Image (cartoon, rainbow over all chains, first blue to last red; front, side, top):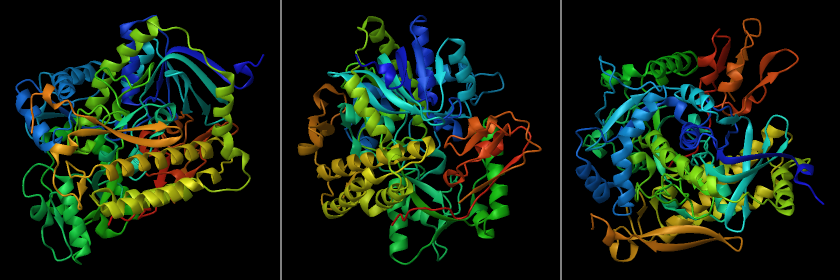
Length: 557
Length: 72
């Protein structure tokens, strides 16, 4: 009889967490707290503690602090940001529990803004109304990883998970490979939590880890997606790199006219309006756009609670001075870069997906949970890390409760063999395409504002056709080793994520939030108070709608 | 392409850079017992390795500008 062990290394666990960024590690801790005897294994393609996005920059975390008016925030968010596509119950719950998520981070050892007495010191959010923020320093995953280890969670590095294993509509584990030695690994798990991020298309360099592999794997396993059309986050980039830093207030065109004031006169950050404005300036011949660093306001006091961040950026500045053109350090040219953040796995209030045995937390489901509504994730600056922890507080224990009572997983030899053959296909080709032969064309389609922000039927059709052209080339991808294979699967996942975003955008024939259709410029509540759901059916991408249960919610149009 | 310079004499073999690199550019050379920039074409100039190195023996030399897709 055929043994799974003949195909590869078999690792059994109760709860498999795919992705060891901030969400994954947090879920591991909460899972072990819920039930210390349950076996928990976190897997990441990089090294846990350094993996993912959060540690790269830390940031300003969004929260509802004591003293904030919760109802006022929710109402403002639903009416003006999420535009009634929010799951308002989840939004309330997230907002209500956001402070506890921050306290939890602090308890685990993350460095957050504190007052002189050592208490958490949130401040008014610098660019979103009716809520607060708190600053967090870089590399917060290191102390949190130590806590996860202490509680008995197992950590496995340098393994890319490529596909999920299914038993009917139940997910029973995953398959992947070690990127160093190429070993094929079969994970048998009673419950699986996807925590391996959104898709950012490798455009924002420090978010290069986020290629949507978990979203792609969940889609192929039959899980539903939601709000894919809102995976169109844009952010200011410096052309010379490495990052733009709060420069949206000091932007000028080639004539020296202040375009920050022209397009975003208020204090709330409105990247949508700024992106359209910058595009117009350039298209009408008044580009390029630059940031006048001499006009930057002095850094706020709370920046001092991020000393590692401050020092990393000083370091980046001195590297830029050494190797870049002089203007890059005084008046850097800026562009509106595509960050994407397709975060579409549909989940319920416990972060459970449409498949039995599968949860999706953090950036994998930040749009799919619908707490944000009809907007891309970046509009509520700083929600990412808070969401990672909040969703881990929910999903971790829920997965454990399921695992404690679930039947042992049954994994089929034939399915594993098929997935293994697909996984290693690029390594059986002597010649073929490199990952960048796929990644660059994808980036070139998702980035332009005319495709991803200022949308129309014709241009969305063009964008989709270009993505389909890329997808036809995927079978030609070749890899010489584990590193190449890793990059191939990242590229494939990106193509699928781009397809989801454009198909959903084509379907939504109205404008809402950051989904702007020039051919349907008005919001259409009569026909479009609905979520667009994506699911694989008979090998094809099927799209259908689900009404927003607006009658159940507090705020109606 | 960015390039990564590693001073192997100054390096103390702590492997922090191998851990810190989240895009699998830096690997461990078992024979030399030192890190090696095995896949510099995938370096994204995040500065994690350079910043984390306790003896400052790594320098990432960026190519400026890097590749950025057209946005308009």
